[in-house]
Image 1 (cartoon, rainbow, N blue to C red):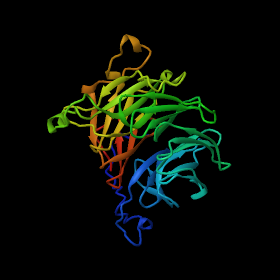
Image 2 (image 1 turned 135 degrees about the vertical axis):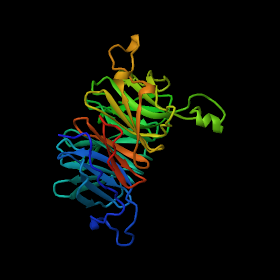
Image 3 (image 1 turned 90 degrees about the vertical axis):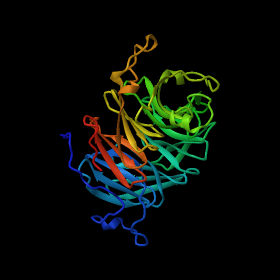
Image 4 (image 1 turned 45 degrees about the vertical axis):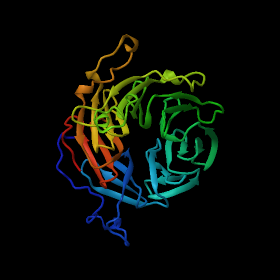
Length: 366
């Protein structure tokens, strides 16, 4: 049972007085830089620490560090295999590590490409991985340490999300492109364009009908002035919802995707740089990490309305009813617990985690 309010438990990863094994002999105050996290069995999160080449296990909400493991590379992304014990780790330069969280050992390592690598575990010992500078998605049998297929892309790959039927949607790391691939099937790419940039935050709605995307967009073509920046006219943050059926069919790269859109900027918060997104199991609450404004945003979809064209969909939410709370600097990762009552952020520039109860959104445990 999770209580609504927690005692403040210090979990600053920089000092590590209580956990001396963390200390770097050459520089005990070296930044850890937590960049990714996943929820694991036993009410704990596994956290990737980029600059100290570690993964740690942290009990939530207590904040106890239960385990810490060294890695042979800098971790960039994490994905837990369906069995809950094998952790797939995407490295900073094309590495894919298969890590056993029970034994605490790297079982195998593959070199797949170039640049920071996103990894996404699939059933049956398979995964997809995408290095930032490869313009491709690789379909991998990680148990056999084999690349089964390469899927070329017309852009640098960023965020990944898997559909229930096994197809994978890949976002452009910089522009507004989105590609759907069927792992292992040649010439399976369907490419769509969203009028947006920095599609860093992706998640599928639990009803299986929509892809939700937190991103930046240009409101209009305007001069870059202090006033226009302040009003959010140069770049603004948005939540877009795209029907998954938009990806079904022949390639439509030149056709803009149909979407619903909600402005995340408000009168008292800038909502800068959406970096990660999570949805509660009932589909009602959308939580977005804002790395540029050091905040966590909560959007209750039930506060919005639907048009005649979207009667079969949940509302998207209401711009004037968003909740925002301050977390650690530059939250790069976000995860919710299986019950949808807690959100945890990896605050990359603060060397901390922030735990926020979703039914008491003003309470933050660091």
